[in-house]
Length: 622
Image (cartoon, rainbow, N blue to C red; front, side, top):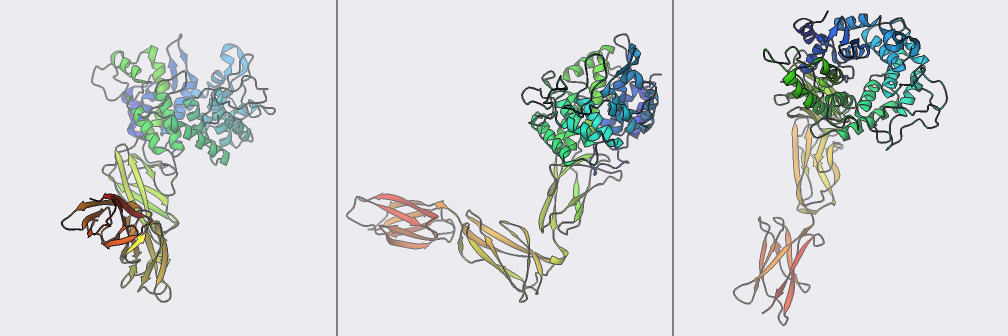
């Protein structure tokens, strides 16, 4: 039977509640639905099954078992209707031999390693017994397809009379499936997979043609780059837990490569053979980026994919009953808008949707109405950030101290987003950001130790009076505190430093002043408030000097670019002719008697710190 859109698809859209397979721990709440776009995509895929199998009407008509398994795995990743997953599991339980062997072509001894690996992963995620599914011990079948020794040890190999079709896609599935099964073959399979990573970070698709060749690794510049293979490998490796450090390092390198190849609009190309942006590559990359802690980049990719999804249609539209399907690219969408999805084009739509739909789970919500609060302030402890103002199931990207890149967080069924963070080990301000598709909401936690809660009543902090040279060391004095009281000191060069008063209620802290002209503010925070003081800092400056004629024998000298109140001297030929302080406008004006008997003299202005602040002008004498 063909499932109708009005029936099971709507049930699927309402019941996709499980988390994406690659979700971070912050996402993994089984009662939180995936974004509506992802649910619509899997809902459309559900309508494409005939008795649990994808049937392709082209080439005389055939059942596409590999694509059927892909749909089942995608349903699990997005959080699909488990009843539908069970239907696929039941339908495929009698089709594994037809899919993974050559039995239907009179060659029952032909065994396809990648097909067995995909069947193994599907059996595991669908709840089947992988040791006895479809008439096979799938774990044993995959183990038997692994080369045991030599330069290709760990490599999958088909058992065929002709070409070997094993590649990195099947190798990645095998690494995941064998690891989940606790197989001793998982390590060598994973090791061989990691050898397919090129030095720049991407994974190649095809192995060396000769499995006996000494070098079985990727050759940068020879093996072509491939977004799909790289993202797919990352997704499978990220599903393995626990992971060795070498696997995490490979994931990080691959995700860094993906991040570097993302286009400004968020999209990705596939390879030299698919050089234009498409949903297949972009959707796969979105999931890989999220798995690698690049939530914001994953969100941009997901938003690009969503732009090529069939939305609600008016009655009579060529795309009626196709809501949720994903076009491969803009050209496919344009053609379908006129002609619909035909038998000739449907296969491309199936494959685009099944590969890209999990990427839609990384769509970000609107940050405009978010209100963020937090609990916990003790340094080095776990605090909880809470945000309201978003819709159930919406995703946001959290970044801040202690978070590498950005991680995905989800609004729960109570309409509240909760995320746990580890506060910095030292006291101070810790600012966290929640980014959505249209902006960022920030929240600052005042990290303060409960033991550092001295009262500031009667406490005074003072820095050096007058001007101080930029970059020099200066002492801050605190008096009037209770003996042993703790405070948080902040200011230029200080990121929330805990200081303790001595037995006399006083303390001294030496600081390095800023390197430029400024007023440096230092703040002492206690349990009941804060006290502060400022120090005026003078940095390097070239003073501007001008001399003008005035009434009488004296010349009017004007010095500019001084700091208000700065000491200044006017010097000619080593003799001080005038001195004083700058006005609030940073000027000093004096009338001086210039030497006679010369054609010209140089008038110099020396600021408070002459080595840093001076200027001069040559004056022609009449």
